[in-house]
Length: 402
Image (cartoon, rainbow, N blue to C red):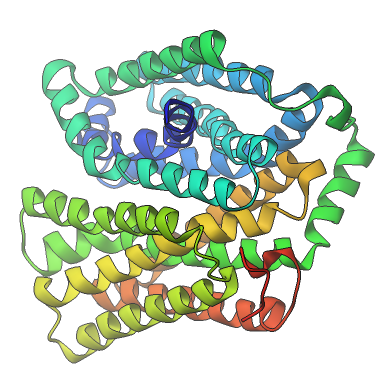
């Protein structure tokens, strides 16, 4: 469990860095004299860096090994966090956040590759489920932790704490983590080989299908994250306290789904059967929320169960489809993990941007629920096109297609 906790802590760097930052946005704007709304760029630049990192970090880990890549990423994360804490201008802060997002992205790619190095089959799926469940704790505690740190030392202390966390993780890797990628399985690092690796990764129908399903499932989740504050606080008129409580309750759905996924991973349920059931459930929950928003009868009593169900469905399917995507590519697990995470964040960023674009022309709840439903339907369409009825390793533990 300690090994899994270490990998989960590495994977949690981005959500911790994002969610701890949320309460600090107004104070950052006031500190630099920026107009309202500009503080959200600290999130956008972080996500932009995160998009780039996996494409570079995966091949680096395949060439030099997991341990050196981890140490380099964690040390760079600490330095970037310190730069955020000491930023003399808003532009400097944005640049530092971009770097911070880039190196945090490396920390997310590597745990997937490490699990693929060490574990197989149901054991790998169980580990991924446990990691996903532990990551789900971050949205529960990070916003409140950010608020408490701000009370003690202002917004700069938030980034100082992140620097300390990165340093602690680096120390743990030095003391406790052994290399998992044998020398004979390492890939050469050159532009031509990288291009061939990525073409090979994208040429795998199993990888592409499961990765796109995962990405658009995450897009539905990120649409909720992007629009939830406007819907709950401005449209439904609840306080920031109740927004935090609702966010925690819905985030718990991710933990519950992941824990249940870990329990059923050894029961022989085909991955594809579980995937299509979860996608249908996500689309149904999103559709009910959209119908309520369009009909004018959306309330917390309707919204929370719908969001909880959608988040639960993602948590239930995510570990299984992650494993199914990487499983056919053991010799390029780093590159495959990097591509998977980049496409995930690209889909999430696109969903968040679409929600922001639609709020105004449409009511916030309609925009949020509409993008959630669109994302779930796209995931179902991709499943139907690329995965339905095909055999192979991605069929799940029992090796059977849906």
